[in-house]
Image 1 (cartoon, each protein chain N blue to C red):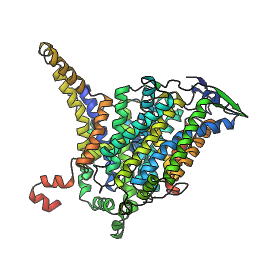
Image 2: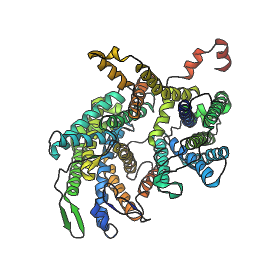
Image 3: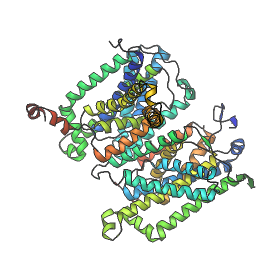
Image 4: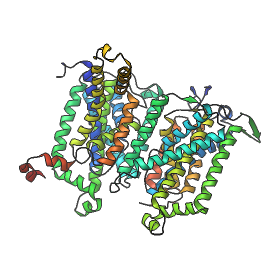
Length: 318
Length: 317
């Protein structure tokens, strides 16, 4: 389906797509007001279990991916159950602790590579198709969820738990369900990552990855299901756009910039557009701070999107 | 780095950072030695956690960037020693001042301008600050570990069954002095009383004539300054620092803060020493890779069964 793209573009789209899926894994528990800094941990669970299944037991990729997601979901419910009692900062710390424990296990368990990392995971040539398919399924799912009773129940739990309980909503069930579903989606993202990168170790799924996932949703907007897609897409596109600009810059003839003020300006621009990892992350951090000051609800909000719609739709769906 | 057999499996590996090699050599036999090491580690955890808990007490905010302040402190000390030719006391003082200024910057960038009606917004903006500081350090200084120059002449003293080095005595001494000083400031001075009042209730404090904004600023300065000194001490102790040291230290500081009770300064001091002991003992008798597992297990158990910490907490949600 995507054979016409060159390898670089495909790989780029795969990683961006995995980030989108991971952003959705954060979005589901966030919809009920649970902020998790452990999504990288669930990704690790999915990644390692699916990689064990394909490498050690010869399970085909599709089955291993699904099982990885399932195992992550079970883990999510297991973490979500004690997490019911706590919220806010405490929940954040709990999920952070869980994620760190997973990475310690990955480091010390020799069966899955230990400190050497998990090597030679079979490469799945259809990752991009899988990623695209999962994103489409997620989008359909969330667009249905938005106006279903379950979705509205989730929103009400987010806004006021006690009021939701009084309205007859089973808060425990809703919160566990969303936590488990989020973990399952993270597990899928992890499984896809493992079979695309073919190598991972205990630092692959670290705290900074969880933070990055959080950044995607916060920047995109957590109040609408378009937010995670938008945030992850924009933040993954920025470095590539800058890279393209740099390639264009290199097309400028040398004699145009070969004298004093221009060569300095050229070098500065060239360095500025070279967006390697540290600079990209610095930009993320700055974006995060500015976003919190200027638009704490994210770039896309539900109200903002409703304003874009035709009046007739508004009366039907708002 | 010295190589020797460590861990339960007896594999060959690098010696754990932070544990002096002579302690490794006798480690199995000498529990006293391990206790000293645990106190050393615990002292730096306690110093980081004090800042966390002060800021949490005053602002009810999980100040995520605190670990990075610790890292900046370590590098400030390093560059003062290398390029400024400062002795270690001047370097610690310099790191303290630089980190205090960083604390002021943090307030103006990621606390004051953030809308108050969203509980998560200040947390996320301090996460942003964390990312910026860490990667700025990587960008400017490179991602490698940098050796910390020897500023204190190494000499070993044997007291009964325990061997203790001059560096260890220095680090413990500075840490304990700082903690006592801080305790006196909080309990005995007007500033300390203002901080405690603001921690109790912002509106009441304002009604009583306390300038809340100034107290918040001051708390950030004190907490960050202490973290800066802790960074320098960590550099001396481990003889090497890297831009990535902040994240791990910050997370350990969070665990200690929870263990001691949110907003409880004395609790943070005791809990820091406790976690240091637990980590060193589990590293010595169970395995070095498992030691972090224990700290996070403690974190989760505390969260589930005693969210107010071991010693209670002043501010509750």
